Image 1 (tube, rainbow, N blue to C red):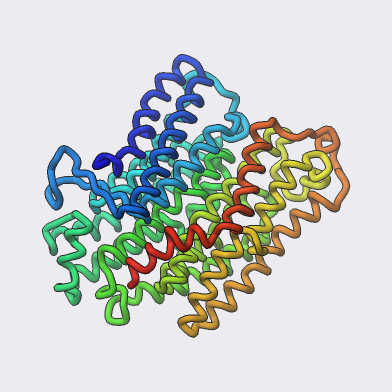
Image 2 (image 1 turned 90 degrees about the vertical axis):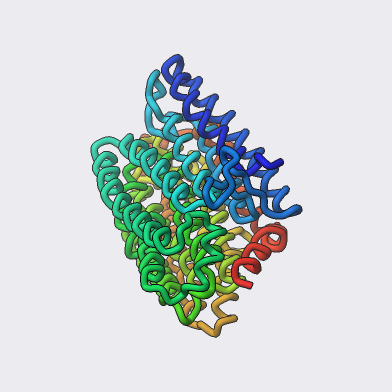
Length: 491
């Protein structure tokens, strides 16, 4: 199917339009549109991933204009893998009850689901685009939707959205300036066409400057330490469902773009020892992010803010895998994209279910919730254990591949930090476990609390089961999808 590369995007784009009309008519109808749209996108993404894994990459020329003049959508194992993750997380959050996900009572005209679908459409466009400027357009589409969704968190959410707007604009500007330098130097914006031109001008100052600008801009979009300063407020002050979307898939668009541009467009002529020290910078800023994010998470008293700083640490693993630039390390980074999407979306959705039932956000007030919400907190425990990296859960295996990649390079510092970071993760989750499962209920609101609705519990348990299944079948994912990607990019 020559149209397959663009098909996963279309249900999300059309769904965003129909959800606006549905929200005007009836609040619940917008959620139905969101479920149908994300479900269709998921089916098409899975079909696309299976097809390109078996038959090779596909491309679609918009309007019949061939590249490098026309805009091209590309579906290959890397873009198909990310497309499945985006659609899957989007579907689960669309199914989740609106009052728990967005901390709002559903009412007519509220643009929750149109904005959420627009965010997902922007992310899907980023991973399917084969053109650097077109990728920028989709980066802005999802950013604009994000600003609106974060502002739903009240006054503090509005301020967090404003901060993200200012910093996100700087990141977009840096990226666009870098793309401009590349266009003036190569005369093309198509990624594949540019990749053939760049090796011959590897020592060009304008290309090296473009690379530095693009990496900085995308690192800011990805919230890689120390460019993460917009993330804690945006994630902790936005509604739980929005925070789940941001942590699970939104920040991964920057990581995907870094991988695609560094390895597919610039290639070894620029990322090797003779180019800019981008790999070295990503490696050690990733390590710093792991440590600093974990330490700051330990200090938090608010559950969502703790999870937000935890995301800073988890993004450090992905940056580290990109920086090490070996097949095993890149496999670890890509596997952690999936693992973190499942783990962190589940943890934020648990927080949403607790807020819906009890309005509790402080960790100290979680005392006794394990007795009152055993299924929800049981799912939370499995997801948290996976975050720590306890085998056989999914979180263990992405860290395992990162450690293996570091040892393969003889970089024992990286291996030691990754292993030690699990102990830091364990500290802030043990603090929660003590309150949830050991301490008796301290407040009347907890003593009277019951399990959240069936959709809340069901979604959390599906995500908890997923981290076990991903761990059990990680070799299937690695052998059939991730290792071929890493070998092609780094081989």
